[in-house]
Length: 484
Image (cartoon, rainbow, N blue to C red; front, side):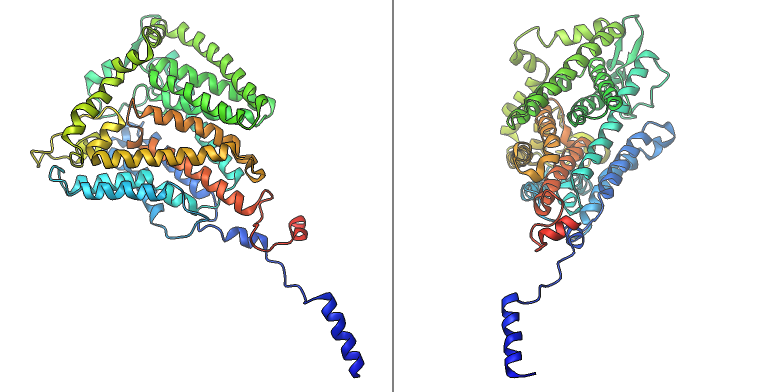
């Protein structure tokens, strides 16, 4: 080869540039973004939780009640202990760590009953907050997120549907009631139907009279999200039935707070849709809910009579402030005017709720149980003002993150935003429920953090992978995107 030939070849190479490196495998890059590669981990957790709930309905498992009740919490703790990486930490993670640390310090409070209740309280709260840590390690996309919501909707709709049978066929479909409920309490949880029959408030797939109300709330909210996907005609009929039985359960359970909770939930979800200029979706949400609410009320009054109309009429018998105070407001007033000055840094662990029932042995005379009817009271008892503030900040950050996804105009979040809008409404309602009960002291709290963490995780991974589901930061060329 002559010198001129070498010069020509060198010149051609300089014009064509260096030989391109092989394109990265986009599927391998997608698999590397999370430790738990399959969304089945999330589905498996929900199956375990729902399975434990069903096991409590059988008298055969009464001797294993405490183990069954703690199985879902133990599973959350086990998943928390699995080491691994995630796309991005959940924005609530640091605040959740602060909440747990406050409880650890409260374990050394002189009025803490014993070491067992201290450990149990810390582990319980860590299990409830656990999804914030282990859900981001799961590979999630819009399809996986939909399966999660679909599973929750299906189970809770089944619970609401069973409540209909429990009302129309008294005693035939009632499960075993919780062993922790006294005879007097059970009597108070009965209602008189229009024909004079005394029955328990619908339990659904729970062991507590009135427990079907939660199934009713879930079935209505999540059915609305599925409805906005404009499904096929037959599935639309199923969704209308789901909303109808859900509202029927809410009317008959007579838990007015959950029924009222649907109002801010619906308004917030609708507003998030309107902020994206989705007027058609808002109308599509309002119409079926209005129709099913009327139909469910007609059937509920027909079978429940004065038990339904009398209970609901109390909501409008006075102004909202008076109604709230006469039912739950005085618990809030007692918390801030009586308990807070006495226990600004908490009253010690294990003095309220199921932890006190199971583990407070009375060994510490100063650790007498304190009744907590609302969530704020429970937080004050456990960790005082610092814990109340930390939980409030955690809920605010979670709500803000979910709302940001709901109103985002990012094309990669288009398939997730509808679920975010519904979850915003659900979060708003559950936050309101803190003024009426203790939703963050059980599996309802786990579900709240699980759904929020799943949504934020799916959104984070969608932004990373782009609207077509392939990594944006792995150097994948547009041609490879088209081919795969």
